[in-house]
Image 1 (tube, rainbow, N blue to C red):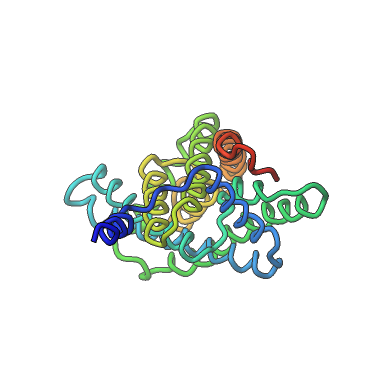
Image 2 (image 1 turned 135 degrees about the vertical axis):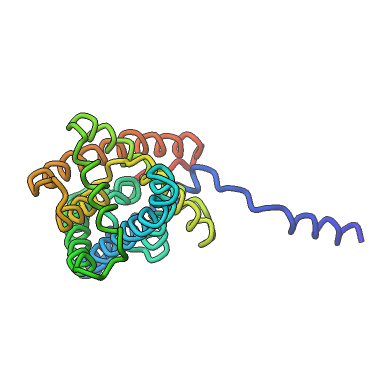
Length: 277
């Protein structure tokens, strides 16, 4: 009986979170997978990620439009941000390819030599282009008259014009934080062992990104394109310039503040089996 009791107690104990070394090893395996995919797979998964982001922006606009008239713009922004989190759930669970997910994960899998570096350059080139193309294609459809519920268009115009008010320095600093946030999300996603856990992590990251109005190169660019379609007071040149600012800031935040520190953390916790690329 005592033995059976001990076994029962052991099976009832909650699963412990993996240590940083184990999380790094999981991340590196995922990075190897990403760096060995064909161009066709990379292109298609990146295209789908653009769709996923637009679905999140649609959810944000519809929720904002439904809540704002009754409870005010602050409540509308809050509930719109909660709704936007579905975008990152779609991306993580569906394994689509968002550009800013690729700062920590593939870098951990780099090897000496040109091949892996060329694959990383390919990843960083194809994924943002296809994210924007895929998202824009869906935007052209859903922004047609009568497709979205009433009130969605003004909500999207307001989002785009608010983004357009940022000065370049503030946009860059916001992008640093946004890049760090999404890279932390990728680290945490590899650390949890269940689909449910990954959904929670992805949703929290998406909500925080929208709630703080952080400058994420793909999300904000697609929001601005939505705004252009509905007549927001912005120009195509402003959209392109913010894309460059956001991409630079996201990379700084993702690699300097997360990839470097998490890698050092994993090496420090690995003792004699420290992970090396």
